[in-house]
Amino acid sequence: MRSKRLVFAQDMSGGMNNPLDKEAGPLSKLQFSKDELVRVLEALPDDVRTNVVFFASDYWRHAEQLVPINRARAALVGFVKEAATPDFRKAQDRHRSRSNIYDPLVFAMEDPEIDTVFFLSEGGPNEGRYVERERLLRHVVRLNVYQRVQVHTLQVTNDRAGGAFLRRVAEVTGGQFHDVEALKAARAR
Image (cartoon, rainbow, N blue to C red):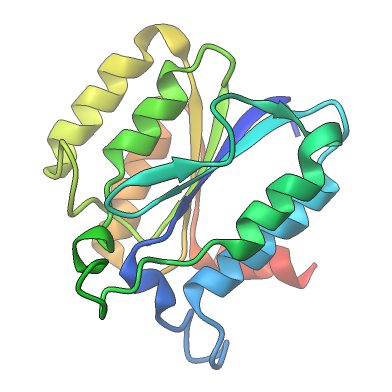
């Protein structure tokens, strides 16, 4: 691992409740990604400063700023394990289960402490300030001119359009794109 100042941004939109794939059986995308995030948090070296951000229509985070993993590991792991997607079947949550990608990226790119983001999602935005993908990418590039945050994107579906968008986010920020097959291979190790 190169960075010691990183954020994990995890998609919690309604689609994350769907099965990961036919091979995974009843395992949802959300459970798969949360399990992997817990595994990573538990393995981070003690000198890392980190945070976890979840997003759907809104975004919420464990802390206002990066926290030392050696002091906050148990709290971060608990935060991840307790997280659930908004239930779009309930009227009060129906409007909260979409995917606002722009706001969590802005949060990460405006914090001068953060230099790396691991951004796990199904694909592109369908809610938020910018929904049109090319426009969102232009704003990400503009925001990142001085901060130079690397965004490594991880896709938990086989959706080509979503994969193309996440690949572009990684490219314009100097990060790397990883598809669902790479994620499953990492889990098998």
